[in-house]
Image (tube, rainbow, N blue to C red):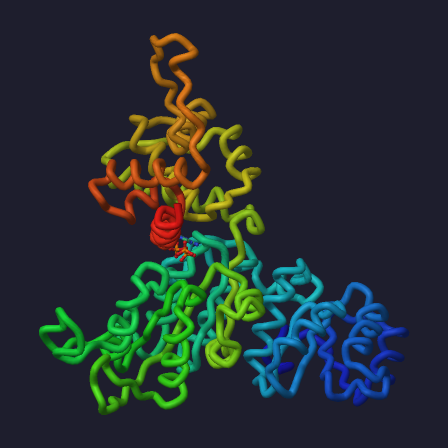
Length: 445
Ligand SMILES: Nc1ncnc2c1ncn2[C@@H]1O[C@H](COP(=O)(O)OP(=O)(O)OP(=O)(O)O)[C@@H](O)[C@H]1O
């Protein structure tokens, strides 16, 4: 692992909780890797031992290592103050990647010598734009793990580039000559999901007029990207687990098995540990998939990327629209850099696209920016000639108002959910999820 970390990293190994406690009392460390099975000399219960080590190692990041994979011990260690939990066995590069990701999240890169390494970083990489140290770390991770066949688990808020990441991993890997087949577990109705994933045999159900390959077979030799994996039905999760364990699948309605060789990449914007705790995601499947994790940081945590992205999108859309724009004014630059970007890169991208469509060119001013922002929220004051008393519509429940906004947007784009989602700055899967919820609410009322 030492070879995978920065060259200047110094690693001290001790065996047992007591020697570790003494060392932490006297010295300063950035990362503590605490093997839970070796702490019994410090406290009877490993959670208490972790708590003591965390207290002694003030300022250090503590990673708990465990022999088995168990949510209760993970939760216990995290409650006791550990910053991450890793199940053994784990190899050096993966451990180094986990540490880097953790350091990124906790702003420890500088002390771990990562900042200096990133100074001459890339401003674009396999579809990504961004020169921040957070993105340099992502590029490094992609470069390091792309050639492996082990599953990758991508996490990150909506709009942070999880699809871009899956494409980059495929493009940089040895399977690039074969297909990358993506399947969105939230967008496909539950009863169709199994046949979409594993295929269907002719006559399996009404409408199955011919044999059809599913996404896994179509990706044979290449990469299968399971987007929004957290939304997958529990019964299908068991079948996916069996597929991962055996490398074989059966099409729906077929008795035999077929061998399929795919690299699996999955992504979610949900917290996987929480899904497991809520029994919505199988723990054993999670650990099968969570071999090489990549976390995409939200845009607000990498403000240096904001203007790089904004300029990139401006140039791109101006070319597309055959318009000529100058730069963003200083005021606009500081407004964009200070914004929170809950929709991350997708939100910024949509805003710039609207600016380009709405205006003819020139420098982007604060007035233009606020006009484009108002447009995005659909705040268009209507001309009102009726008396006030007649004007006020009844207040509808929140879900019905939300439904109206979303369905209006879909109608505006002639039924194209992806375009409506882009205009509303949400993901298409959010729309599908909400639609499912509305029909349940409507049938309940
Ligand atoms: N670093 C980046 N550089 C350039 N474009 C980016 C970057 N990150 C995201 N994008 C663009 O932002 C949009 C959203 O990205 P993507 O679909 O990959 O996000 P996501 O994390 O998968 O979102 P969701 O969870 O909602 O599906 C896409 O158009 C993508 O090309």
